Length: 310
Image 1 (cartoon, rainbow, N blue to C red):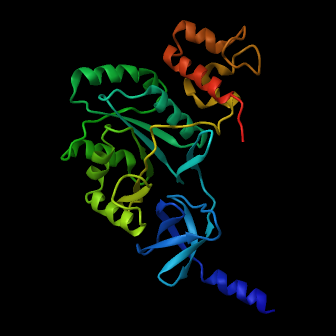
Image 2 (image 1 turned 30 degrees about the vertical axis):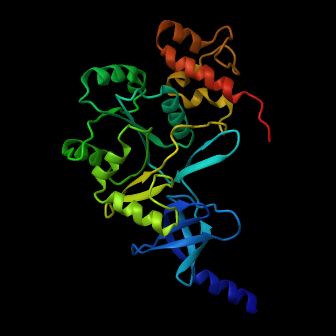
Image 3 (image 1 turned 45 degrees about the horizontal axis):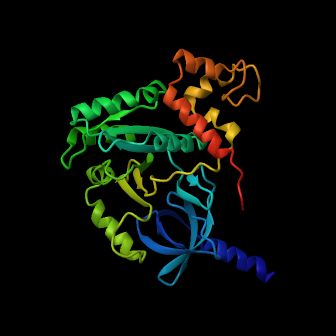
């Protein structure tokens, strides 16, 4: 009879929390009261990522994550060697790119596919609208994405960009948004604009997690409007974005412009690369599907079809 009582007592000791930062095998958990403490995983492998709701147990001045609550989604990338989880329970993925330096459409497409696979709403934001000619060129490159209703936002992010701040706050209100972007796109400026004091807070988190001097090496949660539930998650790792968790035959349905015509093909198992009676190829030839997007589809299909070795 003592064992059930002990299990009940242990369960009663569990407390709810939100993972707001992670580094290595340990993470920073925020309580409902806003207090933060370092927690370690139960066992050898950490399963918790930023955005997870967890149950934790106090252990002196730190804690142990005992349970990760069921997730709505998990945004991650996977290459041949390992899986990198960015964050969980997201409403938006905001992909910030810039007129200069020129963005990689391949990287943009990969992030959009990963978001689509998890049912997360993507937002594309194009920064540096003050650079007229480069911006016009970049905006034209994004025409296929605007047609897919991805909601491309034009921005000119500066330290005092009040107009852009209000636009972003309205768009992100009450949501949890992961911010991704290549170097030079203005990601730090965006976060500092929406979260005054973010740099200092990140420094404190880095010190707490023993991750050395501050560089963006770990994923971090920031409250924008805590009472409204508006939060940003900053994460590194946009440069290389593997999609090895995507089956090649599932790729078409994760690219809205290709998916629109994929169901009209003559063969149910059409790869949309060479088959007769392929509706996608016909719409590429007619210009309904952008040629550069179709090339990306073909290159990704080939990449995902390569033999995988353990």
